[in-house]
Every structure is written in structure tokens, then in C-alpha cells.
Image (tube, rainbow, N blue to C red; front, top):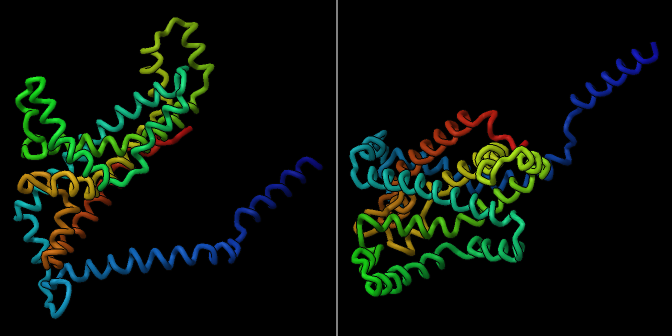
Length: 304
């Protein structure tokens, strides 16, 4: 009888705790961030969407034009090229970054000497400004790489990759990956360190090779971290701007012009309303992609 009473009493207490209202002090702490986010993000976004239905140049008088700007986007080859480049670049960079970061993480969590010092070295690109990295690699691709290509007799390396419309995107992928790998690497290291060592010991006793352990134990156990890195990386690369500006400026021609660059160049060129419509459309596309990623990975992106 006493046990039953205790259970009932405990259940009622738990129910009261679960339905207890949130203390007002928590809302007070949340208020400054909410106000800043609203003023810096939400309000400008709403204003921008409003002006996307006008012919505004960013100042002065304007008139409503309805869906004219949105309709024009779908027949603009420059905008369509920017979307094609941005998505192709993002997919390629996500693949390169995750493969390289995962392999590095496996090496830096193995029983090797100086692994802590090596981890520090590998995360240095993460703290350097993207535009600085771009200018440094611009010099390398424009001078050092062509000289090396001429010295070893590789014709397609004797000229700058940045001046080649068909290969400039490769240089952008390389530089972007070089900066993005450290952040992805840290997440993979955290995932690998969370895998119990007993699992590998048992697999070794059963005769599993290192390759088999990597493919059949490590990869399945860190699958959640892979999903996180893919989602974060893809969403980040869709907004590529600074490295592209420093490397190619969107060239040669418009071969490497991203959506973000098209929008900003349009703002600076007085094409405010049209590029605001482009920005609104790009926002919708990004939201749809995020929802698709979440729906496809729901239940498989946990870190447990």
C-alpha cells in the first residue's frame, strides 16, 4: 500500500514539474537576443521582400511591379548560371571536405606521435580570414603553380587555373576546402573519440582488419557526425562569396559567379529590387533544401 502511494505521489509531483510554467527571468535573458535578431535579421528581411515586388533602385521613388522581377529571374541566363555554379560547387566541396576531414580525423586519433601538435597545425586555416586566404592562393595559382607546371612539363598547369573558364572552379573548391576542413575535422575527431575502444578490441580478436574496422565499425558509429557535417557544409557553401571574390572575382567572365555574388553586385549596380527578388528566391530554395535534408536524415542523425 505504501509503495503504491509513493508511486502515485511521485507521479503527481513529476506531472506538476512538467507543467510548471517557465520562470519570467528566462524570458528576460532571451529578450536582448530576440530584439537584436529581429532588428538585424527579421525586419530587414521583410523590408527586402516587400521591395522585391517593386522597381526600386534602393533609394528614391518606386512603383509596384508585382511578380515581374520573379518572372524575369527564370529567363535570365546569368542568374541561372549562378545557381548552377553555386550548387555544383557546393556538392563538389562537400564531398572533398568530408572525405579529407574524415581521413585526417582517423589519422589524428590513431596512436601516433605528436598528434596533439598536429591537430593544432591542421586547425590553423579555420582562424584565418577567407579573403586573406583567397589572396594568398591567388598569388600561388597565378605565379607559383604555372612556374611549377612549366618546370615539370604539364601544359595545362603552365597557365593560371583562375584564367581558365573550365578549371577555375577547381581552384575555388581547393581553397574553400582548405579553409573548411578544420571545422569538419574537429567534429569528426569528437565523433571518433566517442566510439568505445572495446569495440575495436573485440573486432581485432575476431580477426577484422583495420580496413574492415573502418568500414564496418567506425563509419556506422559516426554516421550521425557525417550527416551533421554534410548539412552544415552544404548550407555554408551555398553562401560562398569572399573566397570567390579574392580568387576570381566571379570570372573568367561569369564562370564562377555565385548567387551571393550576383546579389551583392546587383545591389551595388542599382539593381536593388531585382536582386532582392533573387535573394528572396534563394532563401526559399535554401529553406526547401534544409527541410529535405532534415526529412531524409530524421532518425539517422543522432549522435548516440
